[in-house]
Image (cartoon, rainbow, N blue to C red; front, side):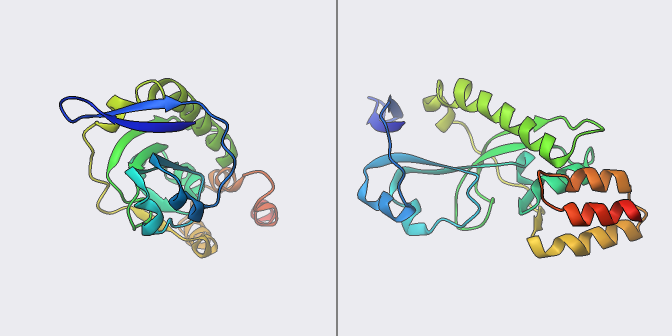
Length: 201
């Protein structure tokens, strides 16, 4: 799906959606295209500023954390561990040169049930996100892009992949809920050895 930018009489933005078959491109090929808006989804690398500047309006990122409280890696894990103290969900925000720290356009909460694993939570968020993309963003793109933005949380939790084992050890030392920890680690075939080890404790 491509979009074309037009200006209204009062100078506002109007997006016309043009349906076309699009072939896959590498990021550096975007500089050869004329386009208005970029949307990043499930892309875990930093997008270079030169690429960001090729979109006339800018780039949006969809991040699987409510109000971008969690940034970086292992978002589902942290969402399970700290719920309900911190809510789970997804956030749509403008991309800048810092990870998951741009101005926020929209956030949506997702409820976590007692038996939800990280994998179940991920698909819950995906379901909410699909509805949002199909019924809100696509149908009301003009209004959505003109929403008043909100500043991101000042003191988020930024989590790196290398921190996981240290976090788990500290969590267990503080008499953390082992069952909750296992649910937080359960995602497809990842962490099988670690989960097996925890079950033996």
